[in-house]
Image 1 (tube, one colour):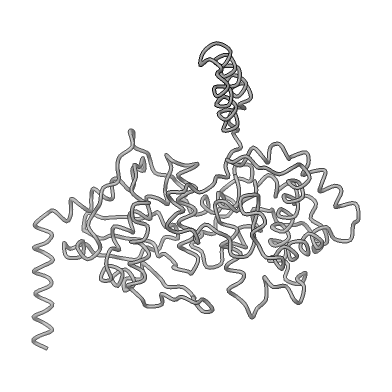
Image 2 (image 1 turned 90 degrees about the vertical axis):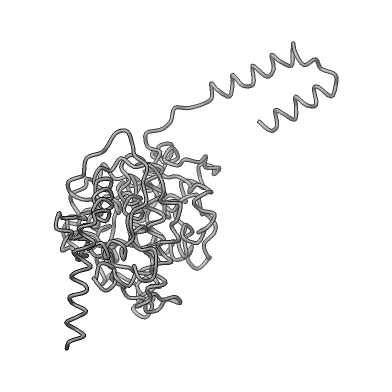
Length: 422
């Protein structure tokens, strides 16, 4: 279009009339652009992170080691590129015809694969097919090597027992919103899996689950989602976190309203308790004032995961935004160091293993408060999740009830007197 504006400007400079022929050229040009538009693909599921979300936390959306797909192509080191090729070689095994078969399979899927990306991919067919094959085989072989340790090379940098941080950061890279391949590509390539142990292989979805579950808050029900419904790996991860029974939605959507923070609720008599549920979203508040919250395992990659899955929900699940609601809820609860300290004390937040990482939040309530404060405006939006809407309303109502404050005050004074007497 920029070129068109330049041509028309040149035409006018040559004293071409504003109407007449120039007008007809513009109409013809725009009509051709409209006719060339294709319908929005139902497969479109891999989006670029919007600038407004990316600008303040770029590092959370950028891969550290392995670039998958076209959005970050060419940004990884030569060492990691060679490592992906080694995995391709291992994936193909000792069968010389396997490479041709895999290439042919990816070529058949090329048009559909391109349509999965929200941005136009400026790669010719050869480069695009090569990229998809190398990256897809890398992911499938990674899952196979995770399941079959005896197949790993002695010098494999990903599974090096001396560098446990590496495998965690690879999990992080594969859960980035922009670092995805369509799941149907991984599934199709998985049919060519070679050189594995004898016997029937687990499904690709089971292998993916086993790879990601370490250090995560995933339940054991890996098979409650279907491979045909999975868009990509981040989509699968999100689905594994969701409750088995989804809550109802409200219509029209409601704006998320701030609610009291943890210490304020505690002062109003709310009792915080760690829930036994493995599902992060099964938060319950009883009439007796007990707030049960499942434990969140705070591992080093959690910030990146939360930012990416929230951005993904904005793009594909605007009416089903569990993670955005969850982060907004915790963000309201954990506003200060005192709030963070209370959540850690009640074991609602558990600090995972940060050994080997430069930064640490071990026992650091300030870092925890800063983490949730950093989400800020990113979690302020409208929601249709009736569960979180009801929960917020109940907590705000409970705190405003004078009787609850009075009971808590009397109980607190009683405990204080007993301690003083002792």
